[in-house]
Image (cartoon, rainbow, N blue to C red; front, top):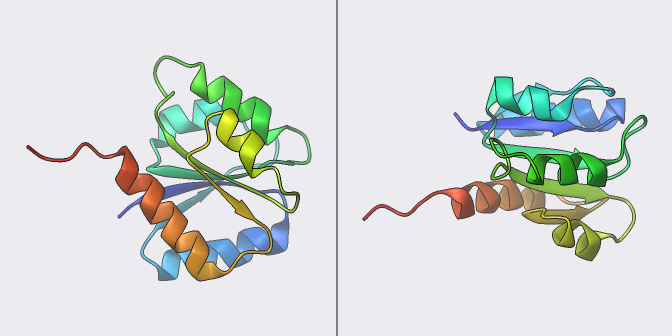
Length: 124
């Protein structure tokens, strides 16, 4: 079962995403709002991270930079989300995908699966 690490500070959004992703067959780990994200990535080993650009106590882009500059977790798949159209900026910081809020559930699931599959080495 693929594991999604959810870094989102909107309680309603977290609840909806948890329900949706579990229905789609994902294991969902919700990060506390002031979590040590790189530390949790190391302990949880998620297949993909879904992270809001604007977290209440942290910047998603700064967390993304920290992850990409870490030797051990730099290749984890990360999909960023935001109500602002900052997709290009997220991609420059090393995101694997970007979703503009509000997005359709199908778009989210497709993006997560696409991100995870692009990270896998093809057999052969």
